[in-house]
Length: 354
Image (cartoon, rainbow, N blue to C red; front, side):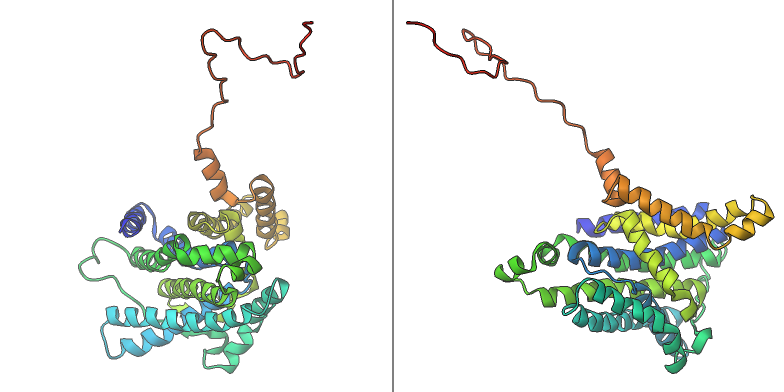
């Protein structure tokens, strides 16, 4: 109950913040909300089980395609709220099934082999979009969700989409928080620490790893659905290697295993490229052309290296350290009356009496 109330309070605070943003900032907020759902699943997957996924963007794409297909098919026969719900169910199912398949492979693969498998899926996504009925390079369109008539005079459509993305992200991430702090989270940490010791304790690492992949895939799929709501389009070009690596960067910057850190990292990877482009416009034209496309990579790399060296736990670990009160040095216990104070001399005393 406490977790639900906290999630509702944070969601309402984020929705209230949209009133102070212009339409473009609300679009960025909707994008950050979708990325947050995916990064939250990724940070739990890596931070609690140690399984590195470099292809989480494929899970977002699967959710986006599942949302577009289910919402479009339902919008022809049902009201838009029903189409939205059907699309979210389609996104969760599509990403969950793909996550299950990856989880079954993850139970048998370790380290770079698993990372290579997930990265191969990202590379193969454009080809799969041309072979499968996914619309090719143009992708598939998702139905437009207009502002309800009761709110049409108060908010713009970008703000409405930001509201929807925030609510979808909250619904995707809140179960992760409960899983992280519950019994399943303890089993994941046991597998991360020592698989042999986990087996001796009655924990089977295979199902735990598979379940962790499914638990990380469903929020990623819902994050893809949130992006589809904001853009009304799902295309393979938006879920390439660069975007997939940005998800890993967001998880590392925020702090692996931290949901709050995932939120911070998601805002950074969405806002920093725009800030970099804005700063590049202020430099001379020749220098701007040279830095175009390279400055963002350079700064992201510098930020990751700096954060990793300064605080391996990420920004969330840094904030936790700042909030933790400093302990005062312990004072020696008072000497009881009639006794001599303890000597600071480390040499043992000798008895010289005859």
